[in-house]
Image 1 (cartoon, helix red, strand yellow):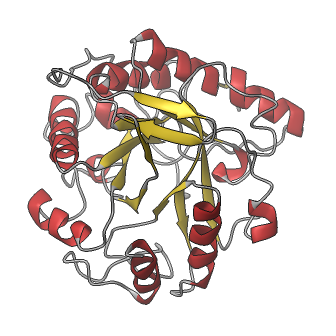
Image 2 (spheres, one colour):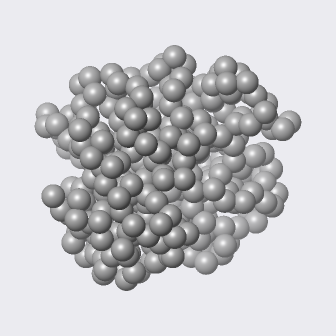
Amino acid sequence: MKRALFAIVLLACVQAREFPRPTASPELRVDGEKLRFDGKEISLAGVNLSGSEFQCIKGDGIFDGPDVETLIKGLASWNINAVRIPLNESCWLGDSRLSSKSSGPAYRDAIIKRIQRFRALGWFVIVDLHWSSTGTDLATGIAPMPHAKRAPEFWTSVAGTFKSDLGVLFDLYNEPHIANLSPEAAWQCWRDGCTLDKNPVAGMQALADAVRHENARNLILISGLNWANDVSQWMTHQVKTDLLAISFHAYNFNRCNTPACFHQVPRGVPLVVTEFGENDCASAFSAEVIGWARSRGASFLAWTWNLWDCKKGPALIERWDGTPTPYGSGVRALLRQ
């Protein structure tokens, strides 16, 4: 979701920490448009857990919500098999101007423990670079593109941390959006990087390379332009790597918000609708998104498992026990089918 950018900072590079390596790590494969994990076809159906992208910047802890066991009880009642956890570049890498209680090792350890708990349930976890800096500022919102130096550092660390668990998927950048460039120039920048407003930005190729340089065989998800709602040139400018999927966002207020437009999303690679929702506290639009995703065997994760106004968030729940908002009620019914 769109958020304001502000403040100034210099990020520090950190050493990656790995999970304990399992004795036999299940294989993750891309089979045309399908995903296979441990030999079985998988489709993700779940929710986003917003909070870890902004709480640490506010100096108000790391997560938005209750303890993890209370959180799990509510989530399990919705019949999910996946969650998406937004990450903050400054907090993960550790910035000296942030509280040590909510950044650097403390932030990374909290994220790792929460993901380990979800994985113990067999749930898949998508981690995404949600808030990135534009250079010397703190990551306080969604920059048009990730920073040329800090974002690759972030993914080097994240990939090294989670590469032993292929049930953790990497969404390289939440919502790229580039203004004042021609469509061709914007897509070239999206893939190869460029300079925007005097700031060097990383293209998706550099972020994918950072992941693979760590020998991480996790699935890479890459969103398109216009706040992850435009993937029209995704295949033409496709990033060169394997184990790759499209990340797509669908909201009723996006430009591409009809079934006719959805059917123009490229075929031939797996698709994960990593965010969808609506700002009318209803669920008719979300039902269209889920129906379309299921029709092509795609995965989908609703925004968002937080106690916000369903017209502003949009929020799925009214209480952490999983009690839905009117919007969430429709989504929950579809998840339970």
